[in-house]
Amino acid sequence: MLDDFEQTVMRQAKLQGQAIQTIWREAMLEPRDAAVALGARESNREKVRQYRERSWLLGLPSGRGYLYPAFQFDPERRDVFPEVRAVNERLGATSDPWGVASWWISRHARLGARPVDLVGTQRADDLIEVAGAVVEPVG
Image (tube, rainbow, N blue to C red; front, side):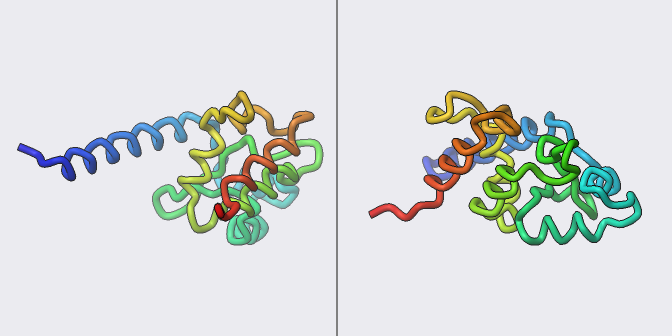
């Protein structure tokens, strides 16, 4: 029989597993496709790596590399949407990629929507404001 602590750990593990499954349902780009989406040659993944390491681009560990949620890329500018870059930086995408991915795909009461659904819309500033509230010190 499991004690309260063990039951709590089991519930958290189940929720975390469900969150990760939800994240993987989003469209993802391989590194070569991310490079092209950033205006580089598919063989030049250095720009992708630099963006990921600066937290400008969310990269999710997968096997021996990374996959990149497709919503981040602005096809007209061939770059990351400015609001995505700002939010990823504020939330620390490099240090907590799964937490940041979860933030993007989870519905937020203040937004009345999932942040991912507001990328590239008139509500871009709302995304940055709500992300800023997540990391503001309390008190």
